[in-house]
Amino acid sequence: MGFLIRTAFWLMIIVLLLPTDETQRSEVYGTAQAAVNDVATFCDRNPDTCARGKDAFAVFVQKAQFGARLLMSLVNSGTGTDGDPQQSSEVSPFEPARLGPGGSQDTLSPDDLEEDWSGPGN
Image (tube, rainbow, N blue to C red; front, side, top):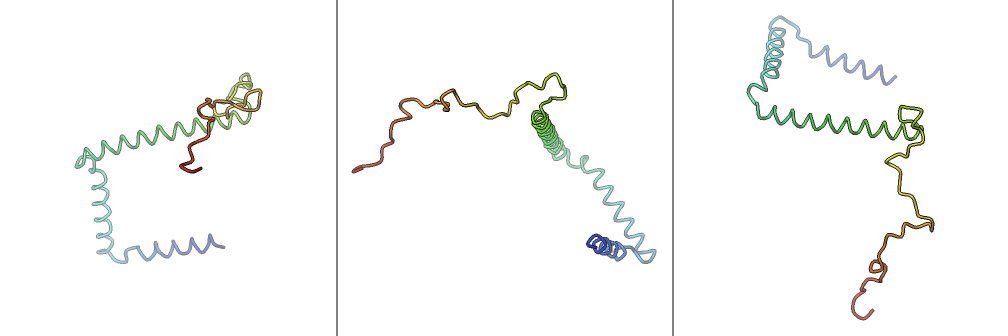
């Protein structure tokens, strides 16, 4: 039901924006052509901005590819395969550290185990 209401709303908005006579239609087409021309020649008018945008988009693509590879490796490590059924015994690089035989990693030095100074009079 909500879908039908939203569809009717957007259809009403589109109908209200449609031009009614020839002069309005020509104004709308002229404005649309000017907007397309502005977008098409933006990089000619602003080469520095386009270069920075291309660099930012390249970084975005690299991050998206890394995220997709990370997600695929997590999914594959969860299923026990890495795309190849022969490699199901590999350990995932995203696994948490294992505890030592005593149940602790015991990575603290003796200085780390000493009590901190708590101030005068304590």
